Image 1 (tube, rainbow, N blue to C red):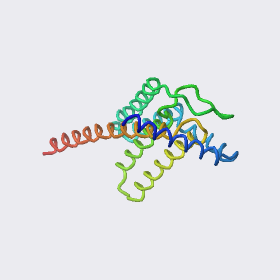
Image 2 (spheres, rainbow, N blue to C red):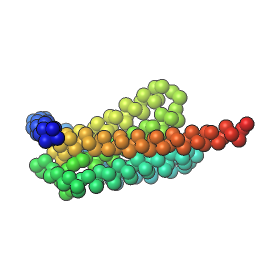
Image 3 (spheres, rainbow, N blue to C red):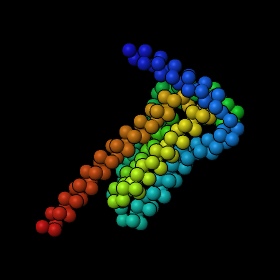
Image 4 (cartoon, rainbow, N blue to C red):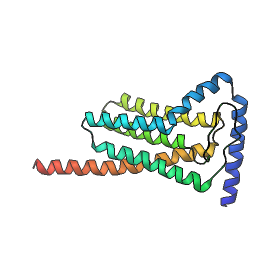
Length: 195
């Protein structure tokens, strides 16, 4: 059963690689080559640091620990799986290159963990439905563009990107769950003092 599933995934991955090859054009190639940098460790780590500073200034320090839990947890999980599975990347094309294993996509993981956690904080902080909706749409747009760039540049298979997204989503879910418990505990303590 597992072998059959892997075979199906392999067929889908191969089909997507062939499709990406057909739609690859110079202008779009340059666009996605630029877009893909948004998912690098350097960029996502800088965003995490800037977000932490912003949360300190807004006196929302409680969110910082869980931001880093989501981000670091997702990164450690991804890199551990990368070297356990050690899947080769698709065929290298001119102008782009990566030197580590393909599965799962570190870019998809990083951008998902950061974008979704920041969205969680922004949605919690706003009472405006339009603002909340814009944050969610914005986050998923960024995740989609960065993740698709990895396939378009032939740096990852579709399954690499999907699993990268799922790892990021898992760690954001864990972080948000712990954050909600901490916020409830703080709220309970405040209510206790005000009695």
